[in-house]
Length: 371
Image (cartoon, rainbow, N blue to C red; front, side):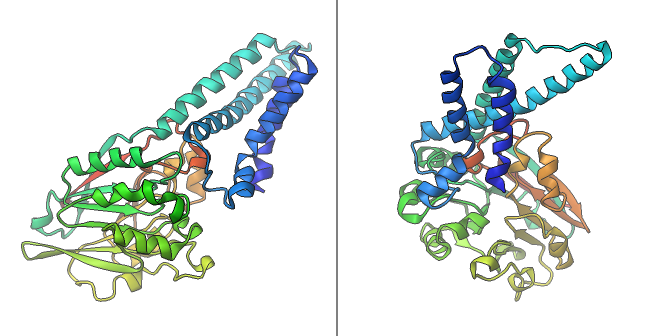
């Protein structure tokens, strides 16, 4: 269904934007074929590389395809808006109106320019975002405690080793007490991503680097990736917890598997299992890639849940659609039955749809505060 759905805006562009132009038919035919190929780049990636999630092509080509794909979507939306306005005006005037060619050219230029800007925003080094979280019962020793929250790095041919090195350096320069990553670190199998993920080994914080798996870990050899993350010094929390201690006080950091785990033959996420043996009086921070199950985490006494997965909705307005698919959660803070949920927009995002407009990427520094 996905591949059929993305064909619709492409057909709108071809029929309503391209065909009415007074160009030679052979040029319009070639452009139509090109547009159809771009609209189906996810399917072509799956056929060529076995998965639609990891296009193993040069980075400039990934950027170009995403720009063209974004332009198709934006131009289809703009053309539909113009068509509706034209129909309304024609109905009022009771006469047939013709859309001038220069307006079609202008719409195409705007769509291409906005798409190029959106891709540049998606591919950049994420800016720092400062947030504070107040936790009831937080020990005084942890007041002012700083956590760097990374998520959805999607290390791939779009986000290669140089990008990872810069993000790692920027993270370490902030000198956090703790670094956490809430899943989707990679897109691709270990044999093709080994060099690109290598800079993650340099991540450093006094209380360690912890991560929970995301759905994309299960697409590319879950067990191999989990072992490799551990070898890089990243402590994986898959229905497990760790206890951070400071001046005799404790803070529980738990992590669960992804919702897609059971479908891949692995353990389903279990907050209950993750908290077995945890100190009863210590505040709990949960790493859960997807925000959908926040209410369940709240029932288990979690104080703060950190999630990603949604990429913030990527485009302002479209984030409402993303929220509906994630139990109403898409970006930022939510209060869920007395628990705080923070949904990170993502350090990066999936290279199959690398476009951000009004929903910027973020490298997030969370400062904990006593209530």
